[in-house]
Image (cartoon, rainbow, N blue to C red; front, side, top):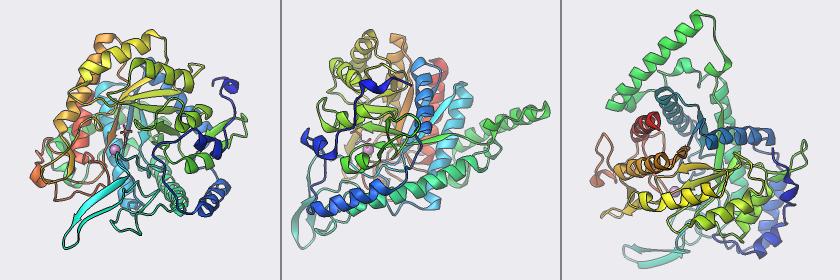
Length: 456
Ligand code: PEP
Ligand code: CO
């Protein structure tokens, strides 16, 4: 671990706000905010500092080119979505993807859920206008995630309520509890590799392809067992949690001094990241995350310059500790081959230690003629392919993918082997924010990325 004397103490919440913080809720009742924050401060940590350090070590392996990061989950979790089925399905698709990546590419895969805290959303506009039948145009505050206000398009529901932050904590705690049970209690045992391939996925082309991989793994396991090898790793997986650190009240209240090291950790999740809209160098989010010890990420979109990235690294990781900082690039399929090379080349030339990860989702969103926000599966693949090609040309390591996905059979992104059409989007569009890959599309992505990885 780094010597963090260079990082300095965590400022209080008021000082953070004084720096100017983008994308924050405007709460109508400040006493209610104080009460919610006080409540959050009294709760136990959701994750342990030592687990965050373990993830830093794994991400150091990613930045060295010795491991690959699979980070995935919903764009926005919802309180209603905290059900056993939902969590299990999400976990299952991540496990299937991880198996495909590990087996096909023979590279260790670091598994990071985009869950147990992903409840707050940055928005491009503060307001949302809808044309309501019989009423006309109605403008209300935009939905900023269940952490802030309600999705329902009514005035009452859209008022930011700080009590929701307390519910984020409890929802995240139940999610993590089930994830820990599933990953260590037998469900994630490699012997279950067939059992993860169920229902609609099993019947798909990619499901059959997965079945073939599972058969090979089964044979390998039987062989290992026959020679008396049965390591712990066959029976459990390590899965970490992550979310965008957006609402300062929540992240600050869950920033605690670790009793082992006397250093601050944001114990709301193992890994937290700064979004594309809140990465201002002198802003509150960069300030807060510069003080904590967790491994952290920063999203870098098409307007990011290499100098921005180098300055962010200097602020966020002054000791240049490997594994501490991940840059998650999200340029768009049409731009990645132009914008990524100068960025990566200059950052690497500056000696910055970083894991490079591709988010092939957020640069590829468009509105279908039906009004649904969607993404083309082909664009997602094209951005990842561009990311791999750029890194290969520069001799740097394409360290991972960051994807929005679900374990369910939703119809939110078009294309993929099942050739989902724009006219299918209405069938099962359930995301309250960005469109996610469904389980079949996610598994297809894993096979395609495994192929790219094998060549990397
Ligand atoms: C997101 O990850 O859901 C998101 C809003 O991303 P970005 O900050 O890259 O736009
Ligand atoms: Co999103």
